Image (cartoon, rainbow, N blue to C red; front, top):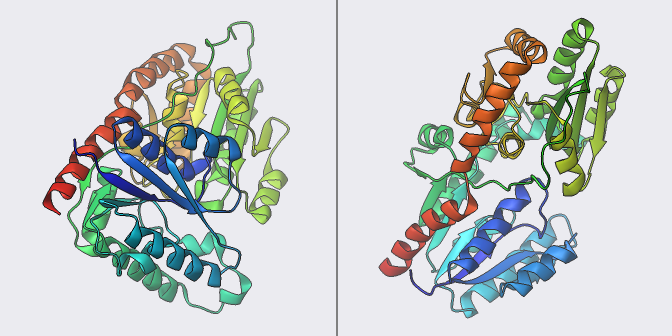
Length: 374
């Protein structure tokens, strides 16, 4: 391993949702002996996490972004100045905010992770001011922007085999795949729920339409009519308010929605659950089913995207081709405790393959090769 100086370009200092991966990369690289510099916006900084990074010897650079559009230009300029004067051996991109403007002008090897191209992103986040723009135009813009960023990198690694195929189809690029690690959130032994007849289903993700919580609620309610002793806990963050309101309008008394809870609280919900379910319609990868696997939970999901790389059908969980199959699978797990235990045991065994130490070691091989060539 080379004693390389690495600039990690991230969006924020946070452990929520997708923001956690850049943090784990930075921590893992530092542990491997690299000099790590972490760039992020000076907005909504998790102060405890900031202190943790600094305490590990990671140098943190906070860049200003106060304005919706102009702020990105300012961030790009600040980051550019830091990069050209910092003597870095490699730039590691984990940011969707600033890389396109910075990449073209910095003559340093650039490693990027491909997290996928969500062509219907605008359907979740479109503002009224953009409503007159045809969807085909938005998709063309998203594809161009993502392709530009990918081709600006020296090397790109994918996070799933599904995305390897997607990158080839959309951009004609051949990528190598390295799976992300997953945090073990299990902080206590599985509680004894043997006297509790309630079958508890849990689903965790951002509360946005493509996560399919409405499909899960509809399916759960149908099964709940056959099995009254059931409970569904939806645990989410960063909700689109209109979608959250809609979910609240269609749920029954056994569906409970929790927003922005702590990791400790999340671990407790995992600990009490019997089944993990997800209905994502866009799945480049998903960490939450793997988090649930540490708690020996059987996994339910729709066979979209990379979900069949996460759920091994009939070994760690059950995959469905459509909502009807999802309902049948939920019935099967609800009425068969032995099946739940068997699949949960398989899930816990399978998840040991996904560690951040292993992920960072694979990335370090690529980093050393890139630095050596430069």
